[in-house]
Figure 1 (cartoon, rainbow, N blue to C red):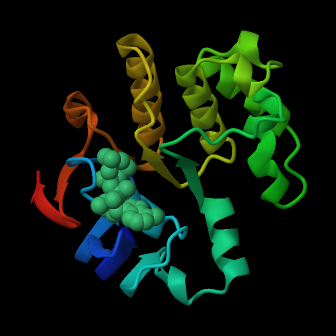
Figure 2 (figure 1 turned 30 degrees about the vertical axis):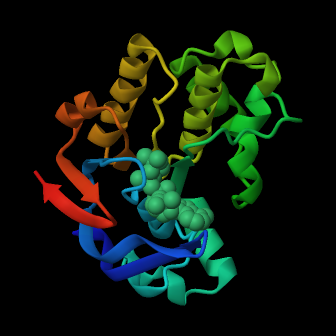
Length: 224
Ligand SMILES: Nc1ncnc2c1ncn2[C@@H]1O[C@H](COP(=O)(O)OP(=O)(O)OP(=O)(O)O)[C@@H](O)[C@H]1O
Ligand SMILES: [Mg+2]
């Protein structure tokens, strides 16, 4: 079943007096359980696509459905709820809260979940162990390297066991070994049912995907 459906989605930006077509009449669907790797040159629209699916950037035209709900027809509160309950995000750029410790950052999504989520503290610690940062749990973000911060963001995205993981260059600052560990973790999650959309410049990751999309100028140039 298609979990995410985009129909004729369009997003333009005004940039320095010029119109940039970040997504041009984009149509496509993502099934539950897929692991889709999205590549394409810088500026091709990868981050915009993930943000539109995640309900973070409103498209200028077209329709985005998640679980058969037109997400841009929902109220802000309903869209937030859907996001908090179903989606996990790893953003392209550093996104940790500087005044919170590593484990507090990982626990952050719990703030937006209904009560009765006891045990999330343990889960946060477990996830930090899986991304190799158990020892750094009580540190502040500025005491970590860029790659370590990325790994914290991965752990945070997984706290509430999201149905869909939207990962924007999650391994960009990592060494090859750590990158492999993160991708192994994604593959494991995918096996247990998590749908994953991963934007990257690393074409080596394509071999781990169930599908590969190449974007050019805000459109799908190639799919395999
Ligand atoms: N907030 C913005 N204001 C103006 N233009 C933007 C904005 N965000 C993105 N763009 C433009 O939209 C196009 C698509 O950007 P997007 O960030 O989606 O590309 P990308 O494929 O993720 O690139 P990268 O590989 O560099 O992360 C680019 O031309 C970019 O300059
Ligand atoms: Mg990007």
